[in-house]
Amino acid sequence: MSILSATFEKCLTGYGEPFCIDVDFETSDLTTVIFGPSGAGKTTLLRIVAGLTQPDSGRIRLNEMVFFDSANHIVLPPYRRRLGMIFQQPSLFPHLSALDNVRYASAKRSPAEAEALLERFHVAHVGQRKPLQFSGGEQQRVAIARALAAKPRLLLLDEPLPGVDAVTRASVLSDLVDYQKEHEVPYLYVTHNRVEALRLGGQAILLDKGKIITYGAAEEVFSNPSSAEASNIVGTDNVFSGTLVAHHRNEGVSEINLGGVTLYSTSLTIPTGTSVAVTVSSAEIILSVDVVARTSAQNLIPGRIGRIIDKNGSIEVLVNTPIPFRTHISPAASKSLALQPGMGVYLLVKAIAIVVDPL
Image (cartoon, rainbow, N blue to C red):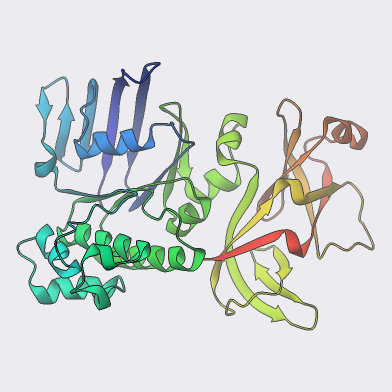
């Protein structure tokens, strides 16, 4: 088990208003996701851990190795930290083949070992080609193989899957998770995609304006924000992980189990038994205080109000079912329904409003 402990402050100037990042966290999970809006300081956090940017003060430690300690004047250079880092752009050596890019990362890797890593990330077929001959997805897979070839103590990933389709993203994430299980390489993973965060699991840090808003188990952080501020960062969608259990072709729907809640989406082509991420916009959920006997909505979910948040123009209602749902209604609707915490309610969701991605 690896323990990353980081407490530091860094103020950046020269880009208009000064920006300061001030964080304090410790994680022993194999995966820690850093999530937040653009400009939150996510990339800066990674660069500081990597040693590419030096903080003004603080202490950073991975297990017993101290990377930075301002009080004791310790500044370990990046090459001695032995971390891997993958950026949004792969930054492969354009004059080297995929195989040579991977071998360059570690002189101790034999050609056979490098080929095995390329095979592991499904890019063995481009082994003798150069990066300009790769697709975007292939470039990122080769970049991941190269980073892991050096056997890093910690792998830092800065939104490594920009613009890839859902199927490719699911495949790459699956490969990353499988590799981690076998080799126990801890990941610090920056993303703005909640599907990625759920697939990776582990812990999640919500970051905004250089400060940590909340921190905890990824599924809990995204499905049940602890405050209005956290809710604003997470967004208005409900995102859950589940399993596709059946296709009902005659009815034109597919059945998904979400840990005790059954949802029906429009008919899918994903095989049964597949782990999936389910996204339901809070704006697509109708809240009722009475049972609706006849409706076009395929999903009727009973629950109980857990929290009501006034969000300056709309009301967010957290409804506890076996999993928590968030819905948004107008202040007028909230008043007319006389909503109160603890009240029993029903959620109506159309099958067409449910978005399903393979995990």
